[in-house]
Length: 408
Image (cartoon, rainbow, N blue to C red):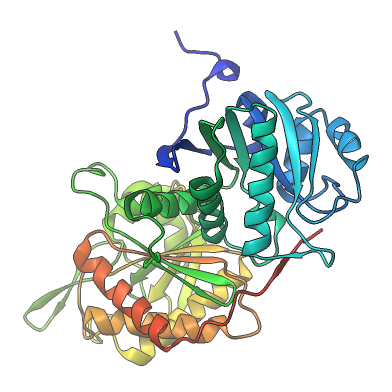
């Protein structure tokens, strides 16, 4: 018999051990927040303790609406790194600890967040909490990324988790943030706090290289289907074909990446939309809805045809057009599968041209893309992306992280 959905158990998507504590990562819609039990929920806040934006509002709406907020604002103004204790409302949290991660100017940085979370964990331990939940507060910050938040939280857990606390549950309400947490926590669990090599922050955007999945892990579906993104890039010809070959001279040249799986899992809905927008001029790009894909948009880049192999300028123009389309359609997270073929350009050159164009675009005025995930189905496809990111890292002088402010 199928279990009633209200009684479905909340299960973590991953588990780790940090600093003697079990860390459970959860990714679910905020509307299920009231179903997860814990002794304490640590909720990032500011000095006003108002719950009107981001994760704070989501918790307020699921915890008897304004009852918890009214209880919290009685403690306002909360000093920097201060902790206010309220009831859990209609959730299954016994208490909610509202911790101010901002300074008097409503800005924050990694040091302030670490200290605030450390004090909140100490407060939870004083309340004899054994299971503590921490809500991902990235949406409460301006120009912040989930990878940095995950790293800060992991450092506090590993180095400052008090003895009574045995389990910490990290809660992400945005799928791509849960994905980012999983990448960071998996790295820390395996390698400690060695620098994470698969990510580079360029202004307000993260270039993230997705490692190839283990052999046999994803046999039925391509790995990119499991990465939450709002747009996926399709490198193809002006007719926007998703499969087939060019016959150029005596060679068979593959047309498309990610190719046939795009048609298979996008279904007829995607194919109909492709037929409506094709053809696209060489060196340009267009977009269609994703059809049956779990990804909302497919951006089609026309980079070669039966007569012309991929050329640097053609690839650069198509990449720039695709970035502009992503901005226009508010695609905050982009997924770029690496071509499984070479046509005119070596893979290393292909990856470097794409990354250089992205880098130049991100220093323009309209760069609001939050995350670009560079995906490869195997090590051979991943390696050019990683080399391009490493070369960009070497020549990029990274300034100290700017303080992030509260959007509220």
